[in-house]
Image (cartoon, rainbow, N blue to C red; front, top):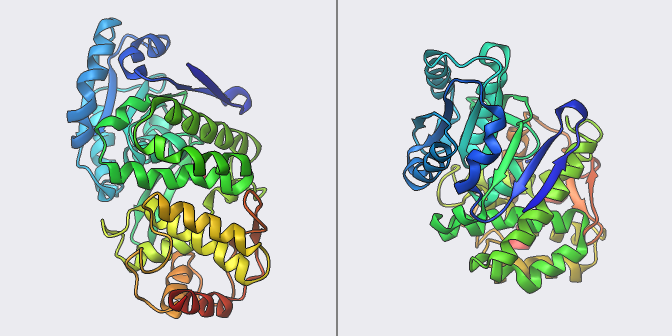
Length: 368
Ligand code: GLY
């Protein structure tokens, strides 16, 4: 088993990674028992696929449990579902000293984490992420949120889990497209600051997507270790270090907005195309060697991920996409901070980008 500690003083916690960990979850959760049942929250799809395994594990450790199910999908990160969840937790008399358990992907993790941060002024929670994206990113680091009319993740808190249990075998029941989309977030760690890991992705990424256990463990462990180090340094995204985790997200969100945040382009797919665009824009600005931008594009293409506007199913102009970026950040003009690269593993925050250059780049990149 790999154990990675997120070092945050008194709020430090471990991320455990091991095949089959879900079936042994009771052993790791037993220390949190208070005499009341553990409340597990999952969406209807994950409840069908994974709850029987977790329930059996808790039963075999003599731990009582109860399940709350919510609808699957991004629209569950809403005031209405938050209210429903909080009422259900209060009905079950959850106390501040209790741990509630988020069993699911980013939607359930973000919603349950936020509920935990405000229930009776804060209770504890454990993350058991069931998608590759949540295993390598959203379950670690304590960002919690729901969506608002004004935009995604606009209402939330920083509330760290007490433990994260990652069982890569849960990915076996996931739609391969979801796994591929989550893989974009794995590649991201190589592109931010670890060129050797990007090289590993080029050589071995296909094994991960094929479900190879060693490749999955290596990719998840390397990603979580990178994220834990960044969160330990900049928990609340104040120094700029944690902001590097948003590589590809400004371009990617514009593509997601243009495709209506729909299944046309999954979040991870938007991030993949966004990272390729960020590297090619960096190259076009003379910041990054063109060969590095080409390597990034080629790897994402080879892995079956979107890597340009066409493969992201976006036909909008550069001006329309920049308007989406400004809307996303609640700006009406001026400039935006962009995560650009001096090369593979050398991402940096650039606050001097001229949006006219971004527009012209996007139009030229399509004509390619
Ligand atoms: N997913 C970005 C972050 O946790 O900061």
